[in-house]
Image (cartoon, rainbow, N blue to C red; front, side):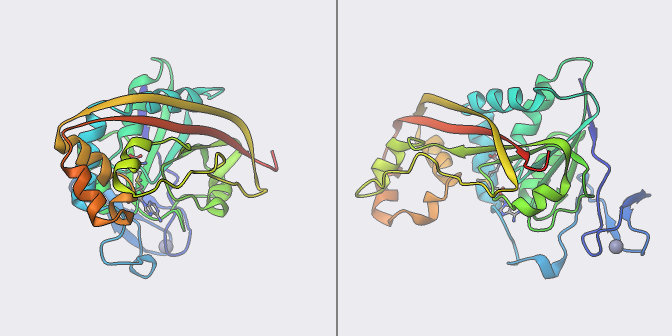
Length: 280
Ligand SMILES: C[S@@+](CC[C@H](N)C(=O)[O-])C[C@H]1O[C@@H](n2cnc3c(N)ncnc32)[C@H](O)[C@@H]1O
Ligand SMILES: [Zn+2]
């Protein structure tokens, strides 16, 4: 397998194609973006930043990295990899929009057959996440950017992954080329049920169809991944909490209860859905 860096980047200021010049990416109008020492490029203009340090914090990224590295979500990576490579030709381009510290792209790269080449781009709004991803794997292109305005040329992506992410369907439709696919990974109704039972006084039942999609996309495949995980140790349980929106939503008393646990059996229940642009 060969993972190469995706090259069809677009200037975040005017959408023009970017080309490498020395240690920078430049557009024909002269906007220039330096490639950082760790090998990523910052393509999030200040005016598009909604906070000073957007996205996951350094501590959240570290927690996610420890948890994923331990292999607890390998079942999700496997299902995702299968969805990505189905009907995929060599030379395809894959974007992980909200890639975090790059776990799923690394797993994808390692699972590809010998004779398949994949151009890879990992993008996240958190510079901490992108820094960590670039340090762990130098092959893909890594970009700090936003799904709200992807710094990617129109019709340049064959597989767009959005894993526990923040989809912007208009942008996704713009960058996915005809014949390309959007692959969404989202929590199902029972995802982390036991963790939620600890931190909330009463559990809100989740509707089964967590996501609804706009008419511009059509679901062509769906797979559920369900598994029971056994988590040992306070750190591991705290790391899982830090990967979820419950970290900020849950009442303090619930968080304290969870922190006191040294063992937790928890359900993984996620949905991997494959969508195509409705115009295809
Ligand atoms: C729940 S995490 C999932 C990370 C990764 N997909 C994973 O599963 O390991 C959501 C990620 O989306 C990023 N994010 C938040 N808003 C974003 C945006 N507007 N554009 C791109 N990424 C964003 C966060 O920084 C964070 O890394
Ligand atoms: Zn430009």
